[in-house]
Image (cartoon, rainbow, N blue to C red):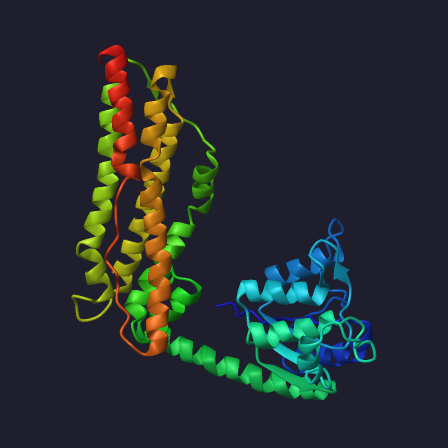
Amino acid sequence: MSVKTPRVMLSSTYFDLKQVRADLTKFLGDEMGYVPVVSELDSFPIDPHSDAVENCRRRVEDEADILVLVIGARYGYVDKSSEKSITNVEYLAARAKGIPVFAFVESGLLPLVPLWKANPEADFSSNVDDPRVLGFVDQVRSIDKVWTREFSKAEEISSGLRNSFANLTVEALHWTRKLRDISADREVLERLRGRSLRLALERPHSWGVRLLFEETNRAIDRYRDARNDHRLGILLGGSDHIAMDTFDAWFQKKKREILSIVDAFNRLFDGPIQEATGINADAPDPAKILYVAERIGRAYAALLNWWNSVQAASCEEALEGLRDAVAKWPNRLLTNLEGWAQDGRRAVEEAVERGVDARVDLTLTMEMEDDGAAAMEELRKLEDRFGV
């Protein structure tokens, strides 16, 4: 079995922290046996077609397993498009990737942050080259809640990292035991990521309900582009043609199709959700939770595909009003489902924070836009006009 050596990205400004970077590079490579990802090393990959900011961001996304963030008195080179420093961009990329971030702030900066927040227009030039450094420190500590340590020399960073790396090893051993203990669910666990995987492994209070909403929102989000197409009226394909002598058959067919999708939602909410999350059973079943969430996502996608097939259908001018009215049927269904998934996740997490049992709200209103009244009105107009 091949073992991957951890790759540690060192993120800081260069000129003011040159010696600190050199000492940490030696510590990471020679003492810890890790692979330092450091821009000044010859081993640091460079794409000649990208600028410095893009190169550094890619190194975090493509290679880093851990980010060591060292913030000194300089803000550093600023990316013109985002107005953020390279160090800031690397940090944001690491946060988005979800890798561990160990942050260190040069001694003397932390006491300045509350002063800067109270009077951001004050002159801090004797302490920092750009007051955005203080804003960056505040973001890391107060907004993102990343644990930070002060340092005045590289040895203090090395000492802090040695303890942090040891804790990572202990945590990794903990997860290894967890995986071994629940090996029967390994196939399901391999399909989970991030927060969902942690819930399935740790199984904290109300984990089944929380996992359901995590995976349902993930399943819905998978079709974000199709939903944006729907909002913008962007049509992709379409082969139906509606003529005067076929529109009634077409109308009845589309009505049956959307009712079958609504029936799928009703079936999922009438039993499977309760069984999967353990509401009517001894314990939640992650395989069943994943099945229900994925099927809700597939039904959501089916509504979007149905809309596209209707709106993209060609027809005679007299039938355009009917086609457009029918195409609006899924609008409220889509909005209600998104609201149920997002509001449900928020309510469940708030319940957990309060220390009470989290429950699934099974009230999903499956109603068509204006209850289909607009389409019926168009049918009446056609009957009055053409006697059909």
